[in-house]
Length: 439
Image 1 (cartoon, rainbow, N blue to C red):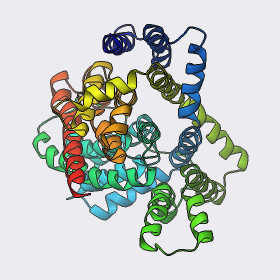
Image 2: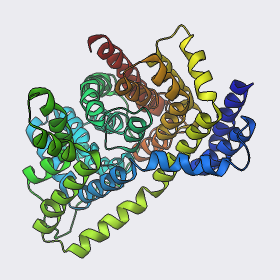
Image 3: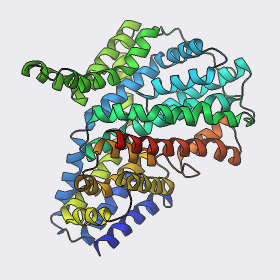
Image 4: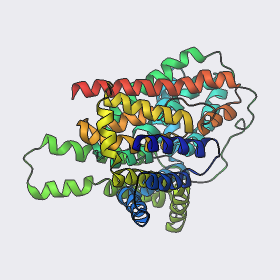
């Protein structure tokens, strides 16, 4: 009976979000209450489960996500993202402009949330397309593939960070494994796949033809722009690798490394560095920089609430005892746990459209499986992240952004965008399975 209630709860969640267009946080909250009552949690204990669910997940995520949003917003507002793009296009030249845009999308995509990165970089795609007389989809999709991969695989993006917390994984190892998996996924879904898209023509797009900036804003230099954007990655990798390279470190240096390696401290350091390199050094006042940070927090308020909602659902399953039953049942299925995690996330993504909601909803079901199967939690984060990118179609906001910005037909959007996302998801799963064999 417990499994029937869980299946009903998941179905209700999907229907509320996809059909009735209920806000994802409210949907999670309502469904969690219904599931809790159905699973036998006493009515007077249910508020405690709700509060514990929010607290257990948000205590380790709030600082990381908020500080990550601040960093990303400053990278965008300071002009650093545009500088990175111009540098990469210059380095790769006309012949390999796709690769230049792809690398730009990857670097800029690390600190920037997907929607912001998309809106910021699409004008660049069209300016390059007009300048070199190249098809916009052909040169632009590799950049958007890179953005998508960073969104699904790499911290400090909300979904990978939240999944890392839920599965009790290590953020540094998730980042290292994520980078290993991300590179082939981006290349295959980007430049390789786009060879078949040269004949896709965009409709008349006039929005970006005169996209010239007339601002007197001082733009950061090449080094400052690139270094600041990828600083969280550099720090997380360093503090993860150093203890393995120097196993005989004394206690005090080790404590310092562990302190600096805490994801919240990493993001704080990155924001402080960005405040100087992309803010004060460029002539911005503290007041201007703080205004940018305030806007960044507003941008991610709903994302934080959605993550909190997923924590409630997870807590209800734990408090009711159904998590253990579910783990025992899932372990008996003749499917590798990583493939199972990918499939569950992919199905939910196809139903609700949101990669973040898909990943977090799948995690609520998979947490007990990860605990009892002994599967590498870091790899499960990536498997679920990859699955959450699958089946992008008409219920996905990214699908419509791509279609409308590029003025494409429905058929061409499915042929380009939807297939690109599927390649990213499938290659991601294959990469995770290969890693599971090697490590």
